[in-house]
Amino acid sequence: MPRVIDLRSPAAVWKEQDVIEGRKVDTFVTILLTTGCWWSAKKGCLMCGYNADSSPKVTEEHLRTQLSKAMERYGGEPMVKIYTSGSFLDENEIPLSFREEVFRTFGDAERILFESRAEFVTPSALDGLDRRSEVAIGLESANEEVLRKCVRKGFTVDDYRRAAEALNAAGIPLRTYLLLKPPFLTERAAVEDAVASIAYSSRFSESVSVNPVNVQRGTVVESLFRRGDYRPPWLWSLVEVLRRGSELSQCRLMSSPSGGGTVRGVHNCDACDRKILEAVQRFSFEQKIEDLDGLECGCRDEWTTLMDVQGTMGTTVDVGRHLSNELEFD
Image (cartoon, rainbow, N blue to C red; front, side, top):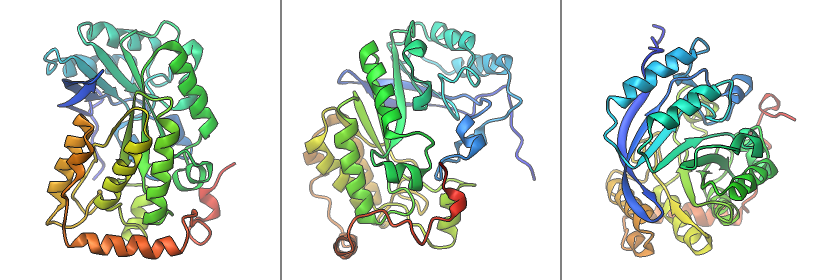
């Protein structure tokens, strides 16, 4: 039965906590249902299924109604996050007039975070942008080969750097998203890639968020998962990345895993998942490495053995026998 989408209601609304300049604050979050990500319509990232919450029929009037409904649950939280299926700075997805209406609507908020692909983050796009803005960019990996073959991101590391430098020059905070374990990487290679990507991206960022891959419906990753060719990362790997990354990072390092503790998300075993996820959350807010201490479970031996074995194999991208020609692009 086809899924029915209500074009006049936001895809989701919820509340959580985040950080503004070192302060933990209440945060209001909404996902607006838009026309969707242009890159997803063309080829798309291998792990991303967010375009399911989009429709080519969405109009600016629909967006205004969605915003009005979302505001019914707004309680004056200092931080607001406005997510879409694509890029808030893509004027084909979010018209400039509606973007300005969003800022007016949340006039009392201290910080308004939204996401954009790197190609839309230009000096002209940032000129006159609301001073409360924070822009999040999904770099995913600072390795060009990983970005092209394992993520199929559609832009380069240099594109990210250019966008990051434009944000830095404009004095607009940047949150960088990195992936932990995109497809076609071993567990060991995924950890090494994430640590190296933290070292690179933290130079430009106010915060770096490590996002373990979760298996979303209708994606290439789900196809690999269903046939037994992909396992989401271990929570031990996430702890390792945060530990090592914290020594290299020049900014706040965080992680808020989607689907954590489930078979489709980052997980270890049923016995320790919750304890480790809670430790990761504490670390993300407090930035105290000791929050990641004392996390023991019998399944750690299995993870350690896996990492040791894969370490003898090297940590290069294993794409040759997995990646078919139709997944590659110029």
